Image 1 (cartoon, rainbow, N blue to C red):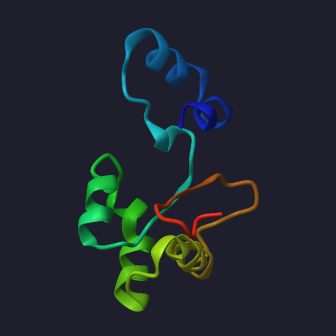
Image 2: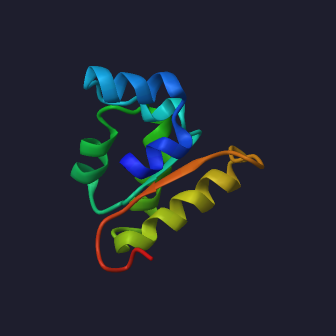
Length: 102
């Protein structure tokens, strides 16, 4: 996340992390999140610092397709696109675990 943070987070968030030791607010650098739908506990744990809207796609992916391992992030992205939420130039953070993430 340190390498990605330099590319997407505003300078103010980066400075707060470096000099203040604060946890960066990822929502300030990303418009959408596609979280590994490995189970409700996984989504809730990652979503603790996000809004309900940020985890909706992952919850719906889990409900519709079940745990499809790390490929579930692509189903979540398809959900966001189908809802018309993703626009050209939006930054999407895909968070996944497992050997299938490439």
